[in-house]
Image (cartoon, rainbow, N blue to C red; front, side, top):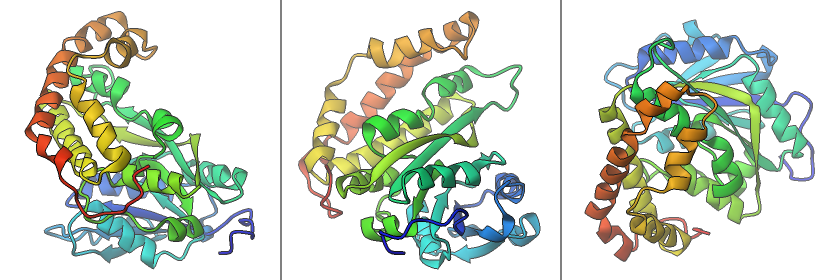
Length: 310
């Protein structure tokens, strides 16, 4: 696709869904994609299995627009790259197997790209859902506040979480694929590389996927450990990634602005729910800080990777 040629009104969309050993939630994701309002003849779904013990053979039955691909290299970013390489669409839409796109997801994501003349990447809203909405756990309530602030990621940090990311094939080819060497943080690295290359990043609040909130403190700690590993790997790339790593390392005390105030001001939590969340803040903050200290050496080495950490 030439950069000077605008997208058609209904460009062909390739939805790319990496999956590893998660058949139940993948079924729900595919059912949601089968119910999209976007013209069904104008999109395909590429499920990229990343080495599951048993490949999901039900893909086409669950969504007639879907087909199954296999990527033997471990890591979801390697799987996304494989899907992008096999995609037929002018638009690439990324989501995850544990997400459920709302019916207008593709339609609204494409609308955001059309508004940017196809020269942008768009991050849609990620709405967190509780297993039992009437009796959410403290961890789920914490996630509702801090889980996925996609607007902040897009408008301030210059990337979009790949659970809800739209871009064009032309932009993806110009920016380059995800860094398959990263097991986490690849969306951050790709988004900032796209931003450094002059790609505008926009927030698409009406392109919504649901994502399950983590139910336990143990699950939150697992996520924090994974994210910290990714941040430390990126810090090893030098440049602005290293600067951000140093800033995160020196933030030992919980920030009132970024931790306490979002909970206290949250319109989505009752007063009782806020009181349940507040004790988790120091526990999780100091756990995360300990994980950073364990990987202090990452700030003093240089890993190979894209030299565009701006």
